[in-house]
Image 1 (cartoon, rainbow, N blue to C red):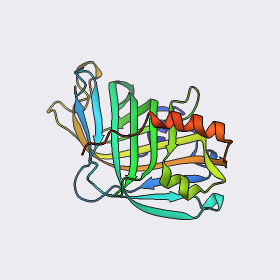
Image 2: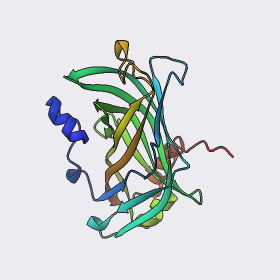
Image 3: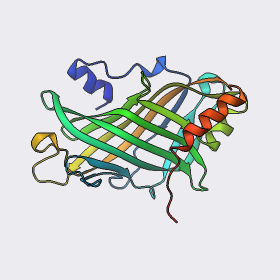
Image 4: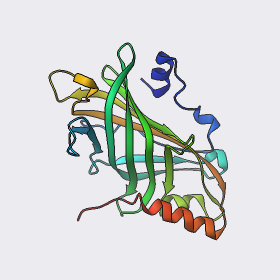
Length: 230
């Protein structure tokens, strides 16, 4: 089950085709050994919302593929932190539910080097039975944005940087609700659940902007830096 499969089932155009967005791709496969993604209902004090997190102790093989732009491809041994708030769901087609997503995620190496961060200002969670997707794109007013870390900046080199065109999709499988009543409760409240997750994303690559614009982008990206605990 993919985001576009769900979109097609609802007759909606949720996100543009990845091929139209740019020339660098990001991905990781679902790691073996149990479910890594968790939604905790009411974690923020509001019983109608949930907090989606990912087990940051689980290693992932994060692939950065820039072959379309002459950058080659590299696989990083990495980890993922996620802090996403999910709202209540509405049934938009028989058996298909949609909820809003806001928050951020960060992918980093074992040496604490940031590779890539992403921020959902207005993302979507779509689910059908035990499958679902978390996705976002960058249509105005920028509901989703990527922020490159030093590791990705080194990969891009001095003359290239990420543009604003972007798409990010987490594919969820084996969604297992914590509540006996199922995933969607009264008034669309999404119960706590665990799930497996894989990821794919794309972004365009542009010539490196001037120093002033780089400073501005750096200030924006700083807001997404992870709060690590020792």
